[in-house]
Length: 308
Image (cartoon, rainbow, N blue to C red; front, side, top):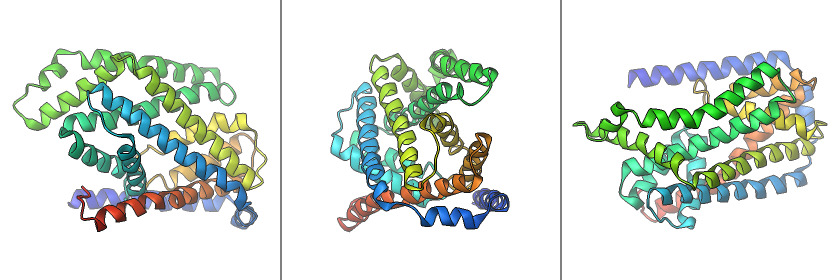
């Protein structure tokens, strides 16, 4: 428990330190002026797109579950995804929603390892799609050397998973005397099964569609804020910024994400104040849209259903 509190305190300190550094770099009054001039009508389409994203992710999850032999209804997965998004926003860790989803799917399929494996692969496929977009966008942003490294990672990742999960040591985990090790072994081997399945192509395509719409949403936020930035530049930097969301050294990416926006905007010659305004708008919209999942969670609680 003490170790957990220390980690949480370290994350809080990191978030506040990075926010302080960003605020020392920008003219906050200009950022507030940009936010004050936001065109609210421009936010309707991004809200709609966010629910399309959730539907896309739910369908992708349904495909991943089908590889494991489970037939789970789409409405249940859609509801679970929305609640998971809400949980992630209001817990100090970005994986809180994944923990909820694992618990929810375990109640449905009755197998913790299989359920956890599908949620993990869902995350991994999203990360892989970000890397793919980062490769395409990096041609417009960074040096060829960095681009080649990104391409190498994209090509090497599935090969590494296949080779790693076929190793004798990993295979024997499933028959280990420890229940925890057996579960770990089954989860790892499931990743190999997912990649080996023909359905993985559909999973990757849906992941790329999801991440591409995230770029589009940020472009619409820029239009709402009257930020004059090209779509190709956002295509180059948004995947890289979203990758920083996964760095577990702050509270839900606070500070790290804002710093990344400022860094990449100024790298391309755009004002840091506009970068911060976009970052604030992005996270504000996430919380606004996340309230739908909170409503569903409250409904589950009022109906007396098990939350976790």
